[in-house]
Image 1 (cartoon, helix red, strand yellow):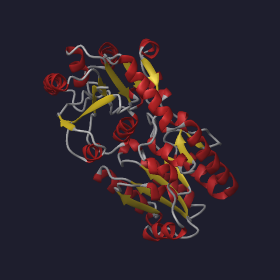
Image 2 (cartoon, one colour; image 1 turned 90 degrees about the vertical axis):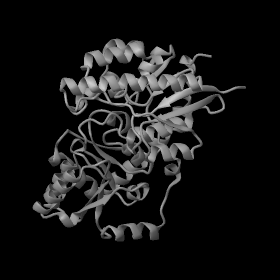
Image 3 (cartoon, rainbow, N blue to C red; image 1 turned 135 degrees about the vertical axis):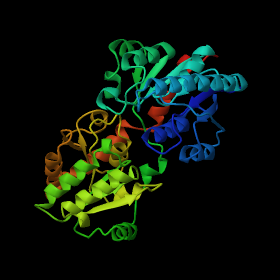
Image 4 (cartoon, one colour; image 1 turned 45 degrees about the horizontal axis):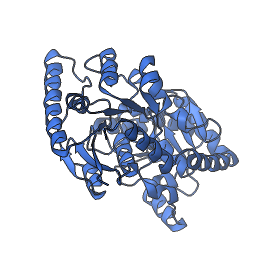
Length: 391
């Protein structure tokens, strides 16, 4: 049987949650049925990973229709570039004879425009909580953007219940479906470290035997709120100095310097470790007692899922995708947004209640394996593609 060609477009070539989810979606698409062509805007981690999976990558630079600068010239420039990108995608669609287009993020409209011009079905992955993130503002205005999402798409795949609820009610009812992410790192499900390996990692980062380890694993930017973690540690250390905070990831150099200065000002610099970027971060979960997510409203929160798969309870803001992943008091603990005092309280609770920590660890791993699996994720993704593709 001849495979059906489809086009899958990523908004970025980097390595963040959306790109990891892109890899996970690729890993579960039925390759016996579909011949998947990939478009990525530039070379990087994503293109290398996709090529290692045996896919051919096409490079087309596409502007995001998210406002950084609302000047008319900037708006017009991005709009013109979007249509130029759409035309380039149309030529690719003609060459590859693709019968459907899937866009990995709603910050891009060029693929959807190309699908419309070529009379092909289009699927949007919606990974953004626009109402909760002031950095995500459509240049077209939210109302117009939501209208175009619906008009240019057959289906909207929302990565969490919170993301779907963020959409207008008509889109929720007519075109939206929630498909919770799974993880792209298959080794994570069976990953473990020997006592010697764990000791080596702890030694490398200056973690003492009796230190309670709290890890924040994400890109380091102001909207990720690592500042709240540092402030919470300052409060917690007034009662117990045997707490170590690992900030894992790279990001804004200015923000990282600000966090380091904050730690010095609070006299806790010895308790805060900045690990920088790591391709694989499994070892940091394994040396952690708990994982912390401080962002106000994560659309999904892939690191939270990775944490519970490895049996690590999560302290997280009770908004967004957290509500689909973490159950308060069972697999982790909720805190209000921007509340270092409450975060400190939860850290001390877990440190001082080892039985509760162990119980949550067991619950976390069981919940992850019961609720999330590549089979369930793949079945839903392929079902949506099957429902819209033109045979």
